[in-house]
Image 1 (tube, one colour):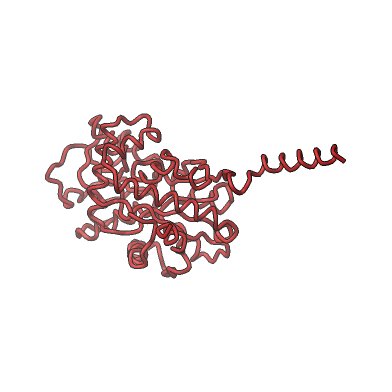
Image 2 (tube, rainbow, N blue to C red; image 1 turned 90 degrees about the horizontal axis):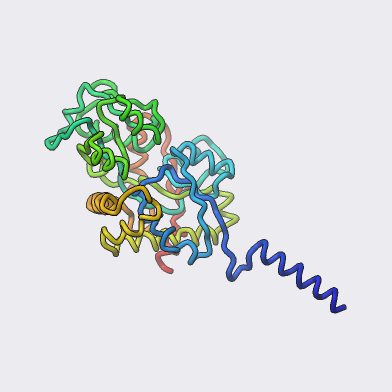
Length: 329
């Protein structure tokens, strides 16, 4: 009898080791990000400061290289959570997919790209792009549509007054500019500042400062995954909120130091410069909550770009429950 109980005990121990006990088990999830950029500083702070581990999660971070690829990874089950512009969720919902993706947390609230030219332009004005070509990113993506929105706002009509190259993949735009394509390119940090440091290009203006507040990047998962794993979604959102609060309440230098692990090839001074630039233009959400007004403004930008025929309902695409619970906690 004693031998039987030893076998049972050993079997139970094996199960616990394989699955992780509920009180102390760490669940590993794959997070597919649209690109790797200091623009997403609160996320990397949450990872590097151990906020996900505090919530019982281990993050396997992969770079999707574009919102369309991120959504593909989520819908195919290659990633549990996607991180990109929420327009990807709008497109999937409008296609009529039953198990569509739902946004549960927002990270950034304005465009994080900068218009980079081939020479210093301290007195840059939007008329300077007339007759030029801008490498703007994938057509239908938030970066390219926001660029169009800003151009039109300044009475520059894409296709008539300026050419926008939408044929180059998001993660290849910088390389294309270096190879001689285009007169201007929109780049995220730290690439934009790196170009400037190497005199390969010069930041002439901030697209985010020009465009105003929109829900630029957010976290989402399939509807079925959220329904089956609310505890994981809540834990993830809690960690993101901790990251947002930490960035908000610490100096540029401290944030830069916290980011070093995620950007080992970028020196501390450049990291601090970029953090300051993003903080100055009020880039990051202070909470993971997405506002309906901002969401509808995003849809107006997409509609104006000719990429949206029907507005998606906010209450179908966005679930703020987890974000609101994180704030209460």
